[in-house]
Length: 514
Ligand SMILES: Cc1cc2nc3c(=O)[nH]c(=O)nc-3n(C[C@H](O)[C@H](O)[C@H](O)COP(=O)(O)OP(=O)(O)OC[C@H]3O[C@@H](n4cnc5c(N)ncnc54)[C@H](O)[C@@H]3O)c2cc1C
Image: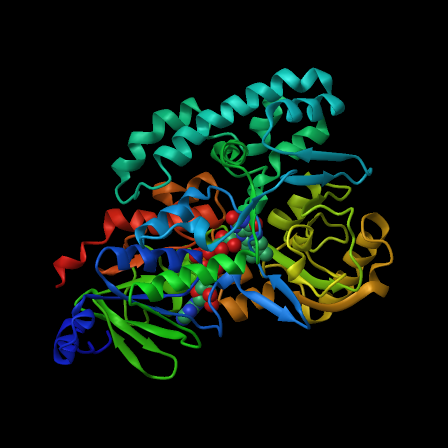
């Protein structure tokens, strides 16, 4: 057990400054979950210090800037924007005054390996027409699928997305609904119940991959994403997702709180079973009344609580858990624009189930891949120099349990992706490259301290969801709370902002510590 540093309130009383007498919350990590938590805690009367290991905030939403090209490293698809509105409102501001969100149409262009194209958007008639183009007999089934997705959305997102599943009774209460909605089925199985065409089954079931789940194994609760997209649309931010991160940092600073970068937390200090603050890698200690970890869930429990005998999230249990896939991401700028390419394109390779088995079950890096291609300059040309385009191509790959030497494999893998893109939607690509950078699961492990290099923390399978997922109020240490992809409700920007929303129900009011 670590020696307790001085209590935050005692230390602050000495300063005699009004703002500094507020109870102190430390947030470890500045991902969307950590930033949202800081804003909510600031609103509830805490003085917050966000500590970020990297040189800039955002976590997976970091921004790479190379030779005049700006790359959002991670999230690009913004859904459920009301969650952002709410954070701005807590600070007496309007999100729309600071950030321009642009609705996407299509949401995504899905390109099958055959060259056929399926465009998705939020318009029911247009979607029916797309479905009919592929398989007229599936139109009725498609309508029924959207209706089922709407019902699951009502329960899974609207009723349960912000509930802290702290007690098993919370889980018991929802079992009847889960059975009624067929949550024991996988996403793919649920979609297949309604549509028969293989291409449509893929187009309607790939969404869990956006949050690190295998459509063949994650619970059909995640079909709610189809309705969520239809309900609130799919958006992109002018200036990129990084503009939202900067906006959130501005809100935190406006509350009198602070975001400190280049500040890696080495330990959460604990006394008498309660978190008392943190110790940074450089040795500095910061006392706090509460600590919120937005660092990787498994990393937090395995590495940041060295003196604590963990009863629940033991190393053994964390080792045995199922983790999401890894990602290979290639960021590149081009000397020309490719105006035919939409903002979001999904390029499906020749295999679906087989590829997912390789990634999630066999942990084997296959020669083929499916890609998500991001071209933000389709919406905001200012993200690249004049006449140029900014792109990233993302391929789901196995996490680091796979026997892959990424130092050796990264360049051939990138080249294979480049050749595929050149042969499909980006002719002459290699000759047009202006800059290039790759990220592999090894980078997720080393830069973001993600266990096994998983891109989305724990996989959202049924037995790792809701009460079964690590709780937002730590099961191990008092005054320690968890937000981010590895906690309830889970990964994705709406998911991690919702993890911070759950804190309102489990963190005591600041007045308790005042
Ligand atoms: C390539 C990619 C594309 C994606 N696309 C989308 C999308 O389009 N839409 C969508 O909704 N979701 C998307 N996601 C998922 C989404 O980005 C993530 O689920 C979400 O951003 C994770 O947020 P988080 O709060 O868990 O924190 P993270 O972003 O994981 O940030 C955690 C932060 O903690 C810091 N940290 C870790 N350990 C320490 C420590 N010891 N001390 C100090 N700091 C520490 C890390 O440096 C990091 O900055 C994507 C993810 C990736 C990787």
